[in-house]
Amino acid sequence: NVMNVDITDQVWSTIIAGDNWTHIVLAYDSLGTDADATTIPMTIHDFVVTPNGGDITAVIAALGIFQAA
Image 1 (tube, rainbow, N blue to C red):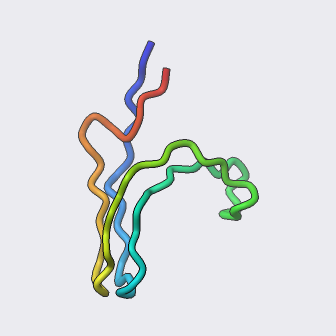
Image 2 (tube, helix red, strand yellow; image 1 turned 180 degrees about the vertical axis):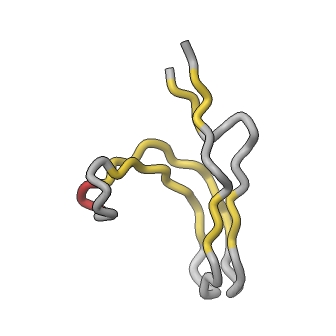
């Protein structure tokens, strides 16, 4: 039994130019507090981007972001 897990494309608006982005971490916030201490990392993906002051979009493939088995 395998299930493809999908999410909508992620967009970050007006990101200040400078630091390079190298990864996206998909995490679960079981308490809904949006606090790092209660967020559980689930997957990490390479995502190399250099912000230029505009929007950044992570396009998620049609097959989903990961498989749960």
